[in-house]
Length: 162
Image 1 (tube, helix red, strand yellow):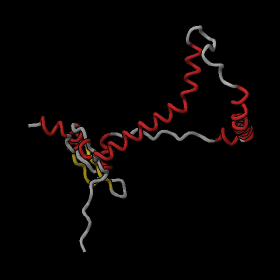
Image 2 (cartoon, rainbow, N blue to C red):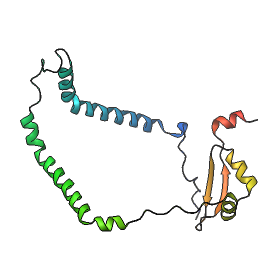
Image 3 (cartoon, helix red, strand yellow):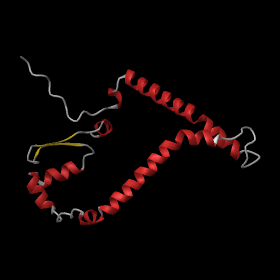
Image 4 (cartoon, rainbow, N blue to C red):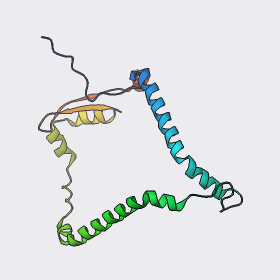
């Protein structure tokens, strides 16, 4: 029985690595979502345009929104939102003593660079070398120690470097 190949983790999505189907699918779905949003927002935008256009601040092309019909549709939602806000305010007022006792976590003491390097088992020379790189893949073990740190040059830097 053969082992499956070890894949790089995390998988880096490169521009050339994205299949054409995925790019076309994303463009089509994004365009459809914007068109659907435009269909839903077409009437409010037309009312806004009519209200701002000459004669200003008056409806000349439309009769304006039917506020009574809008209220009928939104009434239950608005009452529910008001109830939830009031519930949250009353709950916060009733539990104010408990909420005041919760303290923010204190900042840890400052850690020197030497202590950090000792904990992570990395040499200062290796750290200075890795700081110059644009992309560095660092792997940790279960005890949060560095097992490897590999610089991954970008395509641009691979072409420019001698």
